[in-house]
Image 1: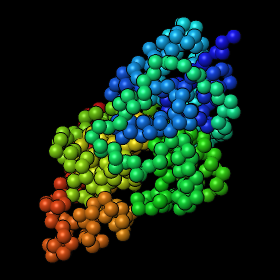
Image 2: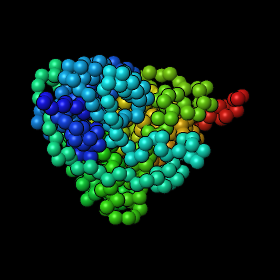
Image 3: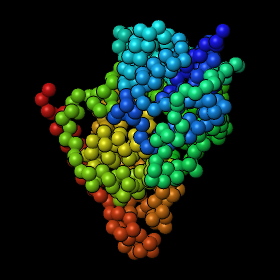
Image 4: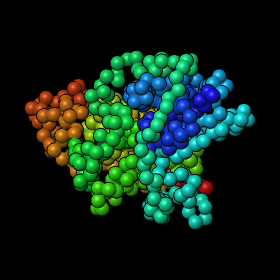
Length: 474
């Protein structure tokens, strides 16, 4: 009797260990592991350039782990799955759930249409600690504030499941499945820009677990405070591994919990809780990536200024800590969390540019670009989201730099034009005496830009716009 082929559809779970759907599939027959690049369904939410670069290398590592038997497809996922199921008499398809709105709609349609053909779909949770529909308030509505979500929701819920081992027996299907080579998915940029990214990252399931262990050994101590300083090694840098599923949140949660019990551990676990909160917000508010959660911001007077936006994107604002952050983003595909808040505040409050402009740039440039986190975080910094920072909370980039990069190690690394400028003037070169600028080799407006906006006046402009918004009828 011919052995039954079952399909495991890899999505945001690019790992073999602690993969609930893959483990379930392995128990039912010979597994055909597939990946489908479905830009057709994603449309405006097709992943950005930096994420595509990461995805290519992650799929390459996963394929190696699967002895070269991971099959790649490009196109409409429903059509790909239907054809495979018919051609190879597949009766069971397994996948781990995704929570972006476009995926939810697509997956539901696929389930319904394949069920009509007698094909059984089995889905699992391999990406979150809790399902978004599990963590609700007592009135069965979703939380809108993080602290009660985490304390009353997450910490009061059943503990996250224990991570699963790699399947003991994983028999992979052989044969010609009309797939396309990984190289033909069109994931790698053609400009050579991505070459600067590779030295900063190790990609794949093994690298993800190594990153977790390194954080436990070197980064967790003093995490609560140290994570605010961009020159320190107290950030986990696990976000791209979690996004692509090279590491599960369950693996991270339990590994951190085993490390002990102190404020640093509690704080890191709360950061995993923020990730859950972002997914809850996106699941219950599908328009989160483009619509203000607080409707009053729909009439906010955002400016349209392509030149100002381009200077921000290129790290040429004349504000050193902002420029350092934007250059870190371009050169590494990553930006330190504290600095993300600083550059975000500068964009939406000092420049008065729409938060969606920032979201789009981050989406294209971040290797950890995540629709839930990216959307929730930009709405948070803009003041228009759930549990948002008040709009009147405007980060002062000068004092932020002085406080969190006091020795200038981070800023000088990414803005080498200012490397010889004394600490006193590093974060506000426009206040530097001409003689000091000359001694430091800095020529404002020539080898480093003039500050593009007056920080005090732009702050007052933003506050006036917010006050007018509060007074508006309705």
